[in-house]
Image 1 (cartoon, rainbow, N blue to C red):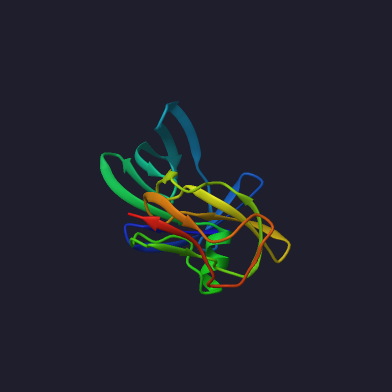
Image 2: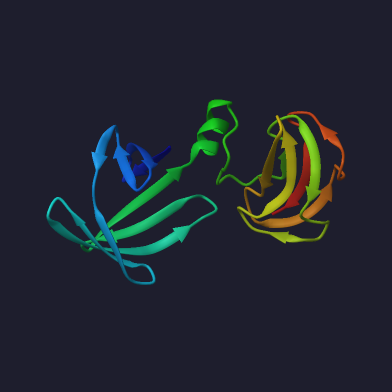
Length: 166
């Protein structure tokens, strides 16, 4: 299950075995790839031409042109929804100087070192929490100024992990 916001309107999408439901209603379509980023869609005996204009995988935001009309699509998968439900939004467009642990856990893999340049969405470290590996990502671009934890360290929720110079 994931949620999608298209031009400001929310949709709940479920998929299983090549079958989709949108807001609980069955959605049947035929999708054919024409070329990279260009598709032909048949839905309810109507033909649509779709083009992926822009794809930002870090923020899960996409711009699609369907029959020459531009649409902005924001996607939240089950992990984004879980973090949101727990009060820990996954991404933010705000500039942040300190990256904090969103939950208590164990640092199992460091992905950066002091002096590394990062951009929004880049992986910084892997934090094991509740028997799950969680990739902690940068929320903005900058240079890793200081690292406050080491591999193998246990951290509490809210502990400062990195300082990023914007």
